[in-house]
Image 1: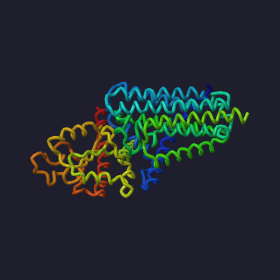
Image 2 (image 1 turned 90 degrees about the horizontal axis):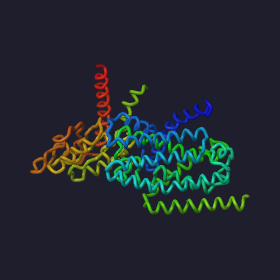
Image 3 (image 1 turned 90 degrees about the vertical axis):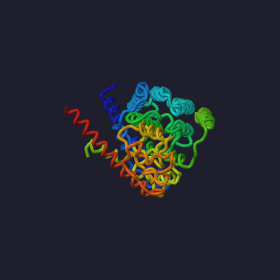
Length: 285
Length: 157
């Protein structure tokens, strides 16, 4: 790593929560407008997190806190490595480590809501982790490398991998836990299992998890954006459009069952990946 | 605006509300839920209805306290992290209302936990409820600043 890499790493780590918070605020505003409400101010997520950070520390056990810090750390590292164009496979694995700690932290408490939420989160990971690997396989097939620099030098992945792009959009929807996939916990004013996996986190530690969620949201949006890496402004617009579609789906659909999610995501993931790579293999080359 | 002012402002801008039905006739509960509908929309003040007292800043209670649920109410109150504010919604929660002489009723919820805002009415209107919650958010901010003053005085020696 050269000194400019360190600079990019630091800039990404500092700027990402600001972008993630703004996107979340816009999400809440757009959701409110769709529902015919006025909605909270766009800066609302920042007010929420700052308030949570200065509330009383209330913990159940020490391991839970450790898990929250590891979750945040892994989210920060994965965004940082993404910014310096490291290996995409490694970035996904770093993200998964954090998620495993997120689940173990919830399992470490005795609240049944937290336990059930953690088990549902495991099922959600089971639904989207294979899909993420499929996306990487598709990228590898086109670019010949897992290295982000090589993948981005390809330019317009979207034209070669349109169906894989749909699969990654599905991953985004499951990952940010919007309806119909909000099983382990739900956001804004919705309630699932009290607060599901977050039930036993309170005050500053809830804020840590919120910030880590912003990092992961931005990471996934950035992964969507590199499908048009020739011009990253267009890429960013495409990824924000996908996020907007997710908000609409969130508002027009109800929560489904875990079984449905597994069969739906795996069917879509496997069929779309095979069709897309088969098309590239037999027709394009 | 400095960081300290932003923190103080965030307390008044983001009060999360937990609602506990302490043996109400459901009239006030329906009005509390009506606050979230598009007509009243309490989320425009950043208020979110959470189901978990560990995440909440404001406890809004409806109905009278009786011998059976006084421990539950105390429990919910104790589970909330500081700073916290309590709103008594409806005349039953304020004073016991028409049920105050019943053999099992203790009276208003202030017999069990400290109350900051009283919202009378039978049932209390959603407008009155949102007014009370907004006042509670200002009290929340005040409580936070007071605590900060105490902490800084301690650290000074």
